[in-house]
Image 1 (cartoon, rainbow, N blue to C red):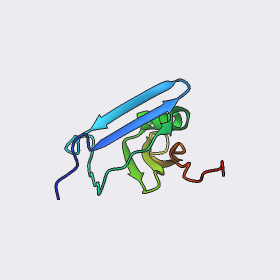
Image 2 (cartoon, one colour):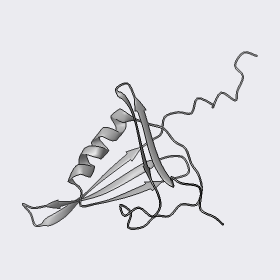
Image 3 (cartoon, one colour):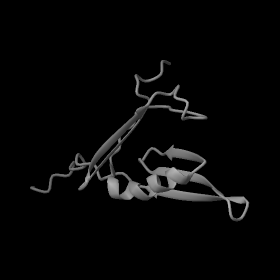
Image 4 (cartoon, helix red, strand yellow):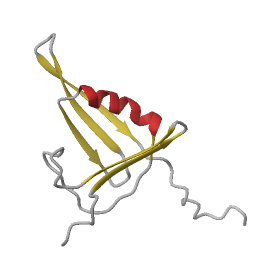
Length: 108
């Protein structure tokens, strides 16, 4: 099977303070490993991603996973210089509710 058209990985956020979109091709050097089995579209609130991004700035490595339901998981490895070790910090973010879920007609 052919890979999906680029970009292979796109994150879009939306919130009261604005929106953001970041795109990466699968060949990007930001990925150690990139596995994708299909196309998925999810939208996340900026306010929920802000703590993830703050930790990303401190992380030496970050693993990002996405399940079929859109649950976005960040696992950050952060070196602790004071204790000569590492700390792992996890964040889990649910996508915004889909506006197309109005399959049930409440007007009946």
